[in-house]
Length: 278
Image 1 (tube, rainbow, N blue to C red):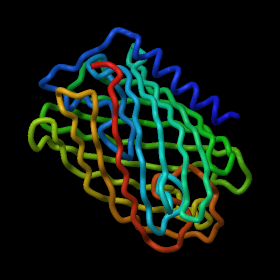
Image 2: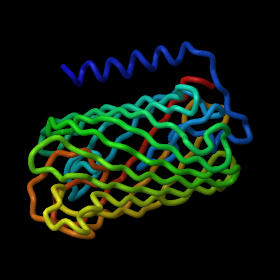
Image 3: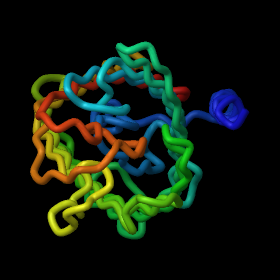
Image 4: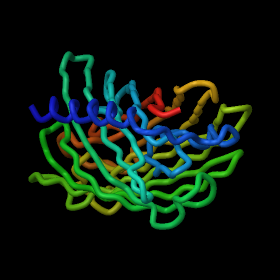
């Protein structure tokens, strides 16, 4: 019931957003104005960015467990919008379809606000946010996120630092996840670069880390947003390495790189963004 309500909220909010007055990015900065150019992090929006968008993404993983580094295929639908006064809303719901035949779901939502910058498209921005999640093990959690980005006409860089507290026995006191991405404009609205993710970094100092230890991913990342289209396309993937290991059972937490598999693997994620305003 909770999952159905969450999905309905996403759809209704998207329809409501599409009826608002559009906020148009300048053509010269359209590529940099993509509402969600990176696959493994969340960026804040500005007055100059397309104000509401729907994002569909899917992942495929080998020798990883749990979406979004699923050992199989996962599907995710997200809504992202600019609320005004430098506030950004980001909410998503996901379904994972394992090769073994199991299906699981999770939801999360957060509100972020730029505290430095955020009034124009280009230049530095630093934001903070809070949110809640309901993961694949039916466990609720609260989290906070710090975002940082710097955008110019030819390149962009972004980073996230996320702190999470899950309300369940056997979970870590605090989970720490970080990500960073860089894109350079190759031609027109085509950007290419790399993304890196550090997951459950508390595994470096906690031998009994509840999600199997710290994991790392570094891989190529591309983003294409035609100026004449409402759509944007992103793709990123790479090998998943265990930086540390702990002997625990899978927790079901929402993780980009999977959780408890003892071997290294890989994850590939693609996304299609649809701007509700153009």
